[in-house]
Length: 244
Image (cartoon, rainbow, N blue to C red):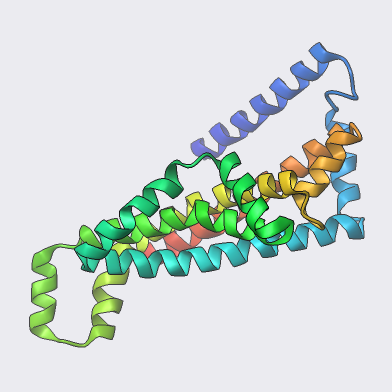
């Protein structure tokens, strides 16, 4: 109950800051009110154009998440088992992690075009998270545990199920937490810059050009709510696993 009260007070403080800024700027075109943003938010879900854009952007995000998580887990696992592979791939991971997002977007846009670039860019930003989570999870497994298990059985599937997965599960859940929010940010940014058709980024660009800042705020709130919902489900899943 105490945590709920703190969360509510935090949300109210954010709304209060919004209202104060609205009063200070005193220009509804530049700083929309709660009511204007609320109306824009409702209208978005009554428009086929917006719904299609939401669907396409969410689809791009989940495809990128699926591919990057699968490859990140596989490569991270193999790197943890084979030091030569880890040494070989480390420069690639370092480059991907350190390259500025805007540079990656421009380079990928030039190479792949506006339709494919968002997938590639999002993959590049998310892949290191799953790679690092898997690699660290495997490396933190006790050698004594592995020795005991290998003495008991040589079944690779059982080893994967009862040793590897339980020990890297928390690392992967943390990677998922981080990757969904980061993935949405990077995806929408790449859509915005590359002007990808039927995308949230394109809608944000058009709203900015037409000075429809109520739509900009409404789209931003939608992205925040989407991320919070996914994190809530992931948190519930983690708690359910802890109860088992």
